[in-house]
Image (tube, rainbow, N blue to C red; front, side, top):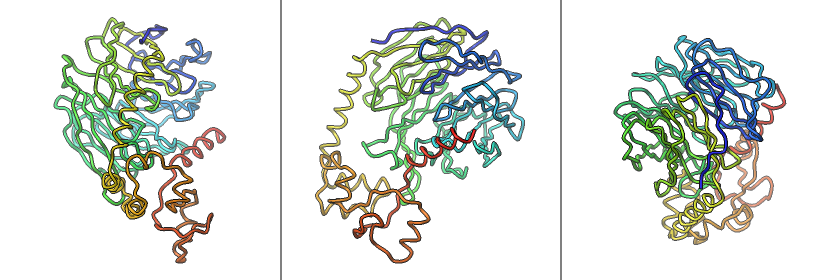
Length: 432
């Protein structure tokens, strides 16, 4: 069951976007304001609403820690706010002065992306508030953007229907027509495809558009194999444009995404089977936005009816999602040793194929691997070092682990994205 537990009706015009942090909900509107609510009882914070923008606010996004909120507006600015006191931290003006339609923090909090109506996309340094990189698409306004969970890729969507993929230096890797009548939203799943670790750069992407479709893509990027965007499937059957899509924040908790259409309905879909679990029809006008909470079973939906509805999923929904997840895990258990080898190659880990084959690692063994078994049985180090120090170690012809003194079967260095994100979140908290 999914039940409506609260309705927020404080905005004076259409709700354009809503976003969750661990403890807060943010909403923004055509009424030029951003509002902040506590998740404990959905009361509005004392320093809300946040007022600075002189025209409609199109998008709002929390930093991963939740201590900073970004908002963007038709007035051509992206504003960073301190969520604890409502003070403005920075006002970043789009170089072209064009209306800013969408903004997003990178997963490690180092950058904020802003996309504008003239097709320009800017990466801002989230600590210095200075322009870091910029790019532009050939046609249309930028209306959607999403970072891959590891932060290596940024995907933008345009009103002309193009999906464009950028690397972390804002170099265009790929662009293709995804939706004939224009894209309205895109979102990455935080969980990797094939049951791998997040650092392996192999993720599912959803896009939706004015063509009444939701498309699912698989995105991969490795230094060995390069970039690849593969179309997977289409969720059709909608009789009106789909205005927003969002994967659940924690795919292990509940594997759903919602897609919203102009018939005032919210469809909650299980991503692996693409079955509709629920249809929510409480709004009285078109639904424009949705967001999943990161730590609780909540979904927020905003509408042109000026309200935000808060929905709660029960344990039955969680169990249903976990049951489906177990089925997917069972599929991985059936992999042969050759399937595992092919999977390693797609993840840019070709150097490990020989080690896995010698140890007869099939799907079942793959799912049971731990840090200890990687180090003791497969002789894979598993420790974290400063890259410069480790590269210097290897350059001196040393082929043993600095920690264990065991021989390294491979000198492939894998970035510890989780540690990097934790460090940047600590810096974000303690440098303000």
